Image (cartoon, rainbow, N blue to C red; front, top):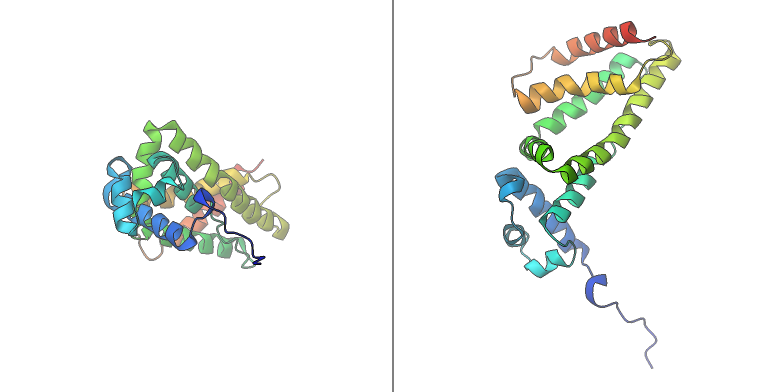
Length: 200
């Protein structure tokens, strides 16, 4: 008599390779047509699966996009420790710079920001996904700098992250203007000076 366990049936059986294919298809569709024109049919066609494979995982388009984008947005950013605040800043800025210039990300991010202004669920999901990791990055960067004596006690990590990400997002995702070779170095100097002057 066979003693092996019977494989679970129905929604419990979800092939990982199909899930990956769907997730990749969603990201490419978002980049090409945006959230408003994205459809379950197009995602299924690009992923090479039937619509039922998608509906076994998510109930609708919004649920699907929110989970996938939240997972991507919430992925940990490497927390640098180069030995100096200037080095840490330049490294994190280079990481963000490359992420914002990625072919897919550069199309998806502005579109989702526009959708977030119209859809509270998208706004809340993005904020929740980004906040924890931005907070962790800020606290480590500032904490290391304070420990080294490079920034004064009381320097605000949240303000630091805003100063780091704000100019990069504006330049690369909003105005989409060219970035001079020395831009990150100048931005590092400006952020450091501003944080020293704003600390209590």
